Image (cartoon, rainbow, N blue to C red; front, side):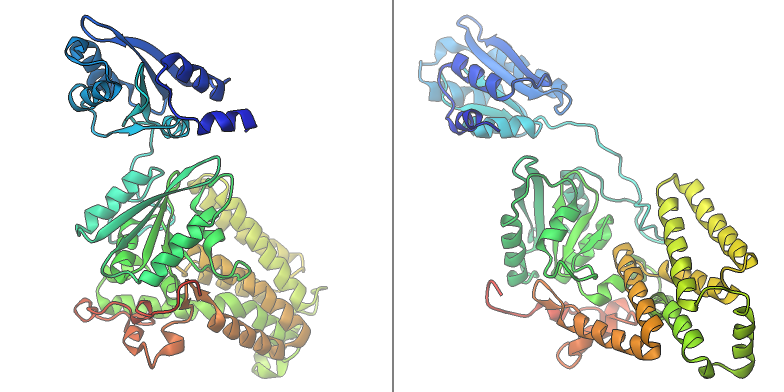
Length: 501
């Protein structure tokens, strides 16, 4: 933006309507969707007014019926003095019946309100403008999130409108202690953000840390909640996500009741939940909708899938390349026989098949869902079978990679599953260089990293790393207790630390 326009934005609204129109015309020069509507109001004595809004972002019918029509029909200037404050008060109190009205003093406020979808009314002889609530752009209907489908549970999901998302949360928590704080991020986009928390449950240190980090964001535009996630997380170089994201209102409500903070970003259906710990990525909303015993079994299966996703291809490489003596004799002979005609070493097999699986997965995501799932299934089978017949890989390698891919689908969080898939390539590399010793070293470094990682001051491995202090939280980790026994808030959110650390 030019320095001239910046100076114009900093100026205050003038009493001369023509000057205000010239300033705003200069600021919005070339923007044909900014509507300038001139009109005169009053029964006998007329006064000039200017209405400004963005075409397509406002409910023009409501403004015409409840604001403009009332002004044109009922405003009586004869009974008013020439004071601009009296005129403005009269219009605010008696002539406008929209749900939300407020005064604005500067051109900057005027421009911001217009671009946010509101309608601004400027009156001749008045040094303040009037903002009329008129947001009304097209929005997607409330639907079930395709990435977080459940067998049992609510079918509604967040959409791209922030106020709708806040309403979906308030439907589930009808508590006056539920607080919503509005902020804006983005020097150009001025994206609306809301921070939601329950006042008497949230950890104040975490809350203040979230607010401080969001205020310190300096970026031109925020187009999706991932921008916020990346800029406020503790360790940007860690492969593990430190903030949860969800499109389910029930998951966000559950996090709020635990004492966590929910960040809703306009123009995206994914809301952020902070802080996040390791075990929270292994939990699903459906765990609490089914009976506790089946939920426990499901969770145990997820934790069994965890080492399979990370280590199974690496173990195949290490055992077949360095430690075949660990296998039973007949099985070792079968592996050796199947590898007799394969020209590539085991590590190349693993890398090649994992790369093919990632390509198939990515391709299936970029096309329509029914066709995508079919291509993913058929493509994987055809490529695997053809590779075996061509002698490029062994049948055992296909089984290993297929089992690993299936296990990755058992992880509820897509972001967390993606992180595990990235780590898998590192373990394959270590196994190809050092065998089982390399895998052991990798596991040690992974545990050290997880134990030192934090999310807004909360240790990432809580309560597993501090089971003595937080032993009550262990009952909702690998297993899910009965609902009637889940009466205590998580202890890991009840810590205190010095501000800024």
